[in-house]
Length: 68
Image (tube, rainbow, N blue to C red; front, side, top):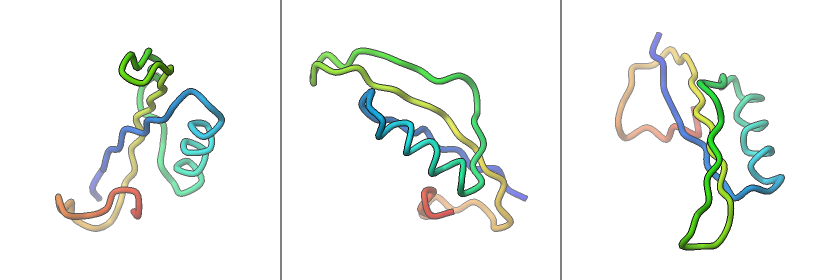
């Protein structure tokens, strides 16, 4: 088994919660605590959450992590 990692990010809206919920529904697991910071360049708050997933195929840097 191989463990893969993604960092989900989004503006602080319901879109972030939906992105995380979608990942969880596809077997990803929360990793660590969420992060929350001000994006000065765009003038918005941004959220981030790391997620991991165990997969049966070997890791390949060309794989599309969101499709696993």
